[in-house]
Image (cartoon, rainbow, N blue to C red; front, side):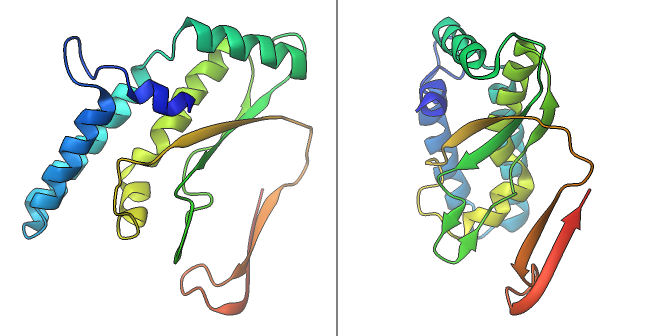
Length: 181
């Protein structure tokens, strides 16, 4: 709900809300379906504008105060820990589509102001060309992409990784893909 609240802010002073503007832009994108080059240019401009707006949007004093209080309660004194600022969206597990890992995770963020900046980056991440193009075929109403943020306290680790239990290209079972750091 916090991300959706952000989208209710005007795209510019006196302008429509970001959400209303996005709905209009998605209608224009659909209208350009038979013109792939023109549609592609329009999409790139649209995504750039959405990302820029989100990166610079102010979630408000109440948001900052509530977050700072909760982070102190859960994690302790500011700057004594790091967090991973992770994304989740309502469109990561659609029928025929899994978008886990598609959006941004910002690792080991230290300090409240840096956390706020990372949250905006995570909120903007579903609007990269890659994330947008991967999910578009599976969405009827693409303006309804809602991003949540998960803050996880960082812990010391020498190794980390992800294991996917199917072929990442074909989806064929019987394969393992392991990415480690």
